[in-house]
Length: 88
Image 1 (cartoon, rainbow, N blue to C red):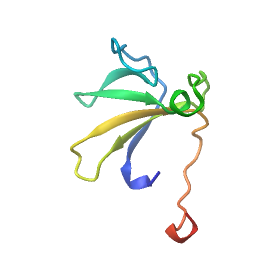
Image 2 (image 1 turned 90 degrees about the horizontal axis):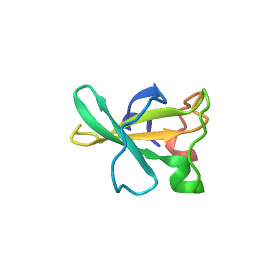
Image 3 (image 1 turned 45 degrees about the vertical axis):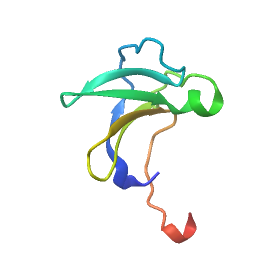
Image 4 (image 1 turned 30 degrees about the horizontal axis):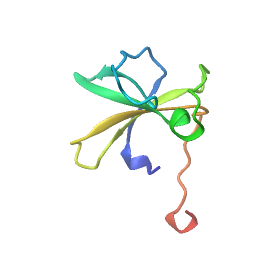
């Protein structure tokens, strides 16, 4: 995940449910007056919900033009490291 698409990293917060959403779309919340849906990365990849840990965070992701934003909930978010593209 390129750091340029990360707008902000938030603690895992209570979310409003979205009726009839797929299991990996776990809810929504207001972020700077915009309603953002939140995808649970652990649920999507491992088919289990993210655990309630201090390191479970919501990454607010955006496209380069700020037209689209989404929340991504993930476990184990404790640090970010820039890796040169030739190593990816």
